[in-house]
Image (cartoon, rainbow over all chains, first blue to last red; front, side, top):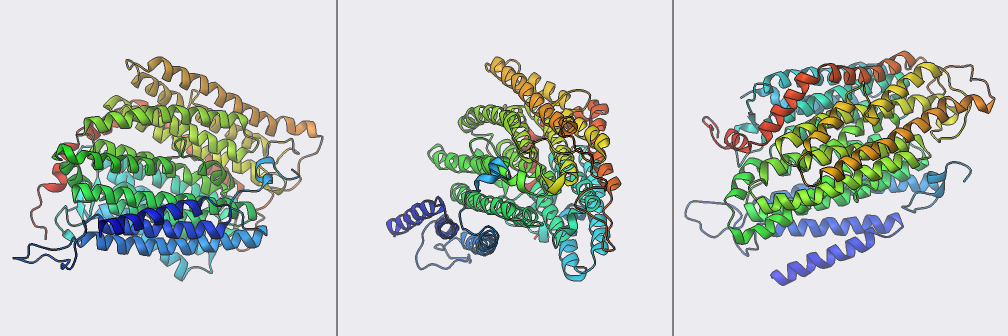
Amino acid sequence: MEFLIASAIGSLTAAGVYLALRKRSFAVVLGMTLLTYATNLFLFTTGRLVIDQPPVLRDGVTAYTDPLPQALVLTAIVISFGMTAVVVVMALGSFIEGGDDHIDLPRRDREGPGA
Amino acid sequence: MNHWLVVPVVLPAFAGPLIVLAMRHDLVLQRVFSTAATAAQLLLALWLLLQSMGGEIQVYRLGNWAAPFGIVLMLDRLAALMLVLAGLLGLVIQLYAIGSGWDRRGRHFHSLWQFQLMGINGAFLTGDAFNLFVLFEILLIASYGLMIHAGGELRLRAGVQYVVYNLLGSSLFLAALGTLYAVTGTLNMADMAAKVAMLPAQDTALLRVGAVLLMLVFAVKAALVPLHFWLPATYARAPGPVAALFAIMTKVGIYGIIRFFTLVFPSDDALMRFAADILLPAALVTLIVGQLGVLGARHMGRMTAFAAVGSVGTVMIAVAQFQPQGLAAGIWYLVHSTLATAALFLAVDLIGTRRQGGSLWLRPAPPIVQAGIVAAIYFAAAIAMAGLPPLSGFLGKLAVLQSVRGTDMTALIWAVILITSIFGIVGLTRAGSMVFWRAHESGATPAPHAPDEPQPDEAGFPSAALALTSVGALIAAMAVLTVLAGPMMRFAQDTAAQLSDPQRYIEAVLERQEGVK
């Protein structure tokens, strides 16, 4: 279980970082999505991995799973979903305005018009 | 419980949606309502500052839940000071945006402005680490909208970079918080501090990983070298008033570092030494890179952005001492540099809106209208940014220099601060002479009409007088800061003393909890 989760987080992060470093906006958006998945999985494990236990405390119950990280993951999912939507719209906007989907700024950003 | 503590967050949270839902077709109504909301925030912040001066730390328990379980808002001197700074910048720059006509070049400027202020105010007030993350996201998502306000290809491209960089930062933030939660089992900052102090030695490794991750996140926000690469393009391409408001966004990162490393982690000596060992060199390099950038920039937006990077470096040099005198100097310079950066961005925007096509490139161009008054404003803002007398920067730099006396790095730090100051002065002077003096060499006559782009029409009232007055108000604020240097410095020292005694903060949150659920 631990190995499965740890390797899943690791491979998602590696793939996410690789894609986020690409030069085209589509790959970058995909990479960030993978990175947020990795982060969410990681957050989920911060309450320790417990199987088949209720996420609530009751009197007399000794074995339970921590409910807080689940709430945090829920918040994080909502936020990352909204942010991904924003970045997709902005990437589309710059593709339509600029005619290509490069993440790098063009040369005339550094050297001014006419360069 | 003082319910006014939650109003700086709730007021803009209601004003923003109201503007976008009920007033989206009437710009004048938006302007009046939004300015009134921002002014109310400033007045409220001033009142909260008065309350905090006595040294009492106020706690607001949302929903009246007991402390480590519910979310708390905290008001101490630092939070109150930052609230006032945010309110002042918010109001003055908003008036500038109205006066220069920037707010009607795109849609929903005023509601985004309110959401931005909501995130900033909340980030300064909250006493809960995860809540800090949520408020960071609120201020970021509003800043994405403001950054691409009025559109344009290069602005959108720079905006995409800005969003991507900050999304990566947010993932890192979550990972840091997760690590800290895994070690301490709490997200309340005061409770976390209490748990860190009792942490068994074998668990400290994971704590330090979390702390350093958190430091990296705040360093991204504060644009410390080598994590500053997002800043110059973003600030140079953002609309002038938005870039000026962003002057406080880098300070949110510095605030985060100050808050966490004076409240949560100070009981771990090895961690604090490690943090100082990383932060001080990073701050020195940040200052050098920033001032060299000022010297080398060919675009006035970029020049000001690099000046902002340099000012972050100066603040961090003082803060990285993590002792009261350094913190006091850092807080003083933080207030000054926020005002100075905002004033310089607005001064540059005054030039840009008066030049052909809004060009900010440092090339000879025909003289601009109102060149005299704009040159005077640019001169004052540049003096403030470079830290020359008579505006408050030189007092701040003196305090920073004095706070590092007696450490084994004194000679190096003094040399870096003083030598890079010259770079900054030369860079700003060169830009000023290019814009205002070399203009006459181009042989062209001044354009006959008033400011280039914002032509008045019946929908709005772009007013050059309002724009000039609001930049003047920022410069006047720095003059006031100089005149009232004594009381202000005492307040900064009191703030630093309060920060150096986290025990009272922890007690305020975790004890005296009668009558809560």
